[in-house]
Length: 171
Ligand SMILES: Cc1cc2nc3c(=O)[nH]c(=O)nc-3n(C[C@H](O)[C@H](O)[C@H](O)COP(=O)(O)O)c2cc1C
Image (tube, rainbow, N blue to C red; front, top):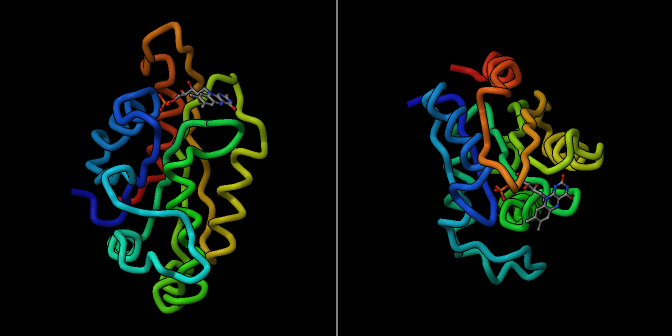
């Protein structure tokens, strides 16, 4: 198992288009995949009444990797709600768990996504870029594959993009 890089994935379906793309990349690079839907995490709470849910243990686990790949379909021009809950909870790292938050500094963040548009709107990638930057992380780029709900996902036509993205993955 790759000890430097991990995929944190959130979608409304595990084995949908994004999940299939994630599995392809994970298989090629022996990457661990975390599906945030397997964890009990509630949205950010200003009073931190949810501090004992699964977020902090999960975040400690993820922060043990040098490269964090966030994976999500494009839903309404942004990341999935499932992944957004995880990213919103980074705010916990700015107030109650600052030491853990500081450990993210200098790490690399990447993105894997699928969407119906040939190219995602710029705002999609920008959300990730800004969020990584806010945590002091470096942005390494995005693998995006357009999908068509009327057809199965044919990953062979995305070989060049998948291979180019693979060059960025630490091992
Ligand atoms: C709720 C919802 C919102 C969507 N919004 C967008 C969108 O804003 N832009 C886009 O290109 N595709 C959009 N799509 C299409 C999905 O991004 C696309 O089908 C993607 O490959 C689905 O991945 P999944 O199987 O992991 O859910 C949307 C799909 C859903 C279900």
